[in-house]
Amino acid sequence: MEKPKPLRILLADDHAILRECLSKFLGLQPDMTVVGEAADGLTAVALAKRLQPDLVVMDISMPKLDGVEATRAIRQAYPQMRVLALTAHVCPSILLHMSKAGASGYVLKCSPLSELLTALRSLARGEVYIDAELRSQAAGLLADGNHAGPWTGPDLSHREVQVLRYLALGYSAKEAAAELKLGTKSVETYKKRLMTKLEITSHVELVRYARLRGLAETV
Image 1 (tube, rainbow, N blue to C red):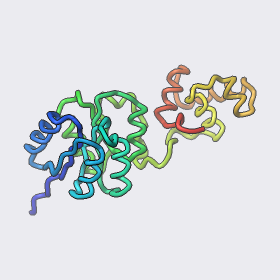
Image 2: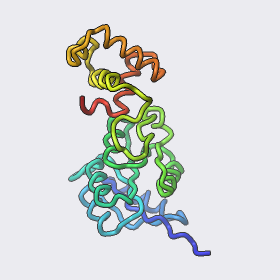
Image 3: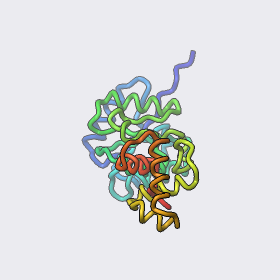
Image 4: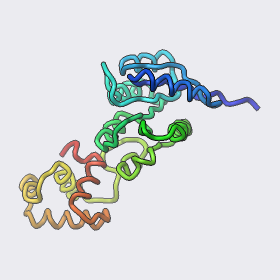
């Protein structure tokens, strides 16, 4: 039986020490090999084109071209290439932007190396992976796996989604009512329905949920 080929990995991070450590660690894994390293987003895109790796470990904050734009460029040119976002921050908005750019996984830099291995192997199987420390904040963000649109939640009416969008953008019930040409009481009623359907008990959690779902992007 032929032995499976090791996963070909491109590392993109502007911290040289971190890149070197990750390269040595991944190189010790029997099912992985590091084929290239990039210190900025533009180099990452160029190396992805030249080396055609299976997976790209992408730092989000990099010079010349940030991880979001580099991920978008790579995924648009090479849809089969999987990108794992490596981040130092727990920030739902960043996860959302990376998701829309095409990333399929997220790992915190403070997590154990075993988490990185689990994530890479999950992506290689075609799965989506979210670091254990991020799951509570990113719940549902990648649920559909294809990033086709901002709303993938429970069945809501068009009007309910509209109300939820305005709340996500920070509008009060009165302000949302004015924009939607509804009565304030009607908006409050929609808000109560939303909280019941989504099993959410506070306004803050409702807004947070909507923003994680991408509803603060547009109205």
